[in-house]
Image (tube, rainbow, N blue to C red; front, side):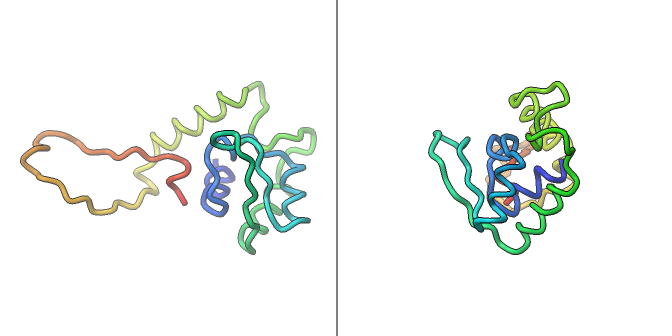
Length: 126
């Protein structure tokens, strides 16, 4: 979970981009200076620059990731969509521990008795 959130924050990755990452992509990012993404919103490939903090994150992931598999986030008997759902559920369940509330101006009379919990997404972490 930590790696997924950190990749979203440092690189502005969406959930499906994060969970599809491979070691080959991360090694290539260290060599080229940009992270090449092919599984993206709308299927349009994009390259994301690797800044110094992002380089450290990639190095940490490569050092700690299991050596016997190429995928970073999938595996352990879980498909890509299952990993995405798991992360979405975790974000929803634990968002109050790391979300920063931004003030929203609303007419209090129209919201009496309604709890407002804005949707928090992976891409919204950056």
